[in-house]
Length: 638
Image: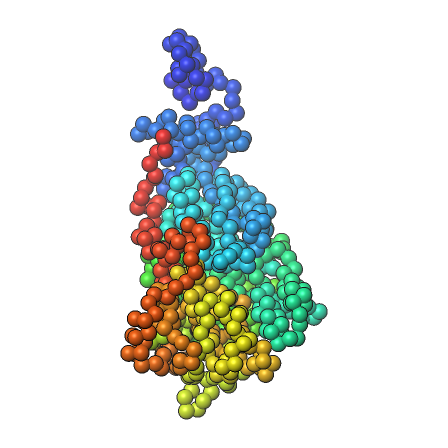
């Protein structure tokens, strides 16, 4: 038909019928003309029609004019019609989390190029786009405030733009759950690839791990062994290259668990950022996402209850972060899988710690990767029938068992055998009682000194009690910790006002250290709080207490000197204060008061967020699930 697909403007600008009939799109000299589809089609044969072509190749239903509008602007960078409108060429998004504001993920700026190469080689067309930056070490008041913000943003991008699949470029702590939560919500084919951990840090011959060295240096500073300049110099040695934390902090944990869930290629999580294997992994990840689109394998096919149980088991075996339950519980909610903190104890507590890296062990992620990474840990669990579901599907197209069976470690110093673990029964304990309804304790970092001081009474084994010193946020703690004479051996440090509503955002401020005078004597103090603790910390704190003080939790009623009892054997945490006294306090004190919101998002977050035990999600968002299947294509925009 004359002028069909043409932008000559004759019809719109009053050209007569003879001019219009004599001018056809076939005669237009343009490299952007539609491809001749008379030969063999390029690209792939998708199992279901490609979603993106509803924008770019769907002249039916009165949308012919809109297809032109959608296509037109995407050609101005040199793309051809064939690359975007061909019904055999999937459009693959690359969710870019690397930037100057996110140094842990900055390696992705280069890695994305190899992802693009893989997508193109497999027959797709890549579209890279930025995600909201989340840098754990820099964002105030806390990076966890931004997890849900980045999640909401990515949901809108994946749903509202013409994409058939997405590569999720992860790394720093919160980037991994934020992107997985969004992929679960929209439910188009997706695959994760992290930026990789940094190389080993050294101070002379001593291995220096990221995060872990900060907690050690902080204690040395408090004890008067080093000054502020020495602290800065010591901490800097732990960051010798691009990449995220080189310890089993939250970054390494969450990327290992993305692999454990089946959402990343086997063996990919532990590759150090500067290794050549990381670029090869990026290329293979790009190729594989095109296959996932062709096969119509979606997050809902992989993120099953079985996958989450595997992840819990592997979290124990690697000595994973106490932030993991918050994030996995959130991902589970957005894909519609029931998961609770009690599941973390039921599935994972009795399993052994096999990975001997900091903060629970000696080595760092370079050794861990060379020793075999997560596949070697998985193989060890499978051999002894300790991986709950070896048949769980992964993005490789194979099961966890087929990916990892018999892929045993090459270095038993770093990845131990079941017969010689770093620690037995090393998972998380789930505690509840009159102090809170739910909290988590990481048992793999309970050292001998802590055990001997607090958990070895033959008349009361695995239990302790003591008076509390209560702090309302880290400012209060830093202001008072060195001046409170009542803080002695056996005192329990309480951090409150640090949860999702109180901080806001739930901050990593519960891993408190004792006063310098006690540190010099080698005395540790138990810590309990409604906030979080860095995954790189080796302190056996009781964390993520829910409900938090700001939501009416009983932590808000504690006063200095009150006695709290912790019984790990019974999973109890109780206030030894008369219930009537607590009732009177609640009446007198009223609602717990935190700092004022400083930004619009802080206020919106506080008004809508759930407790840490519930994944710190936005409950109103959880009802929106599998949008690509349930909500269809968004309405046209003109």
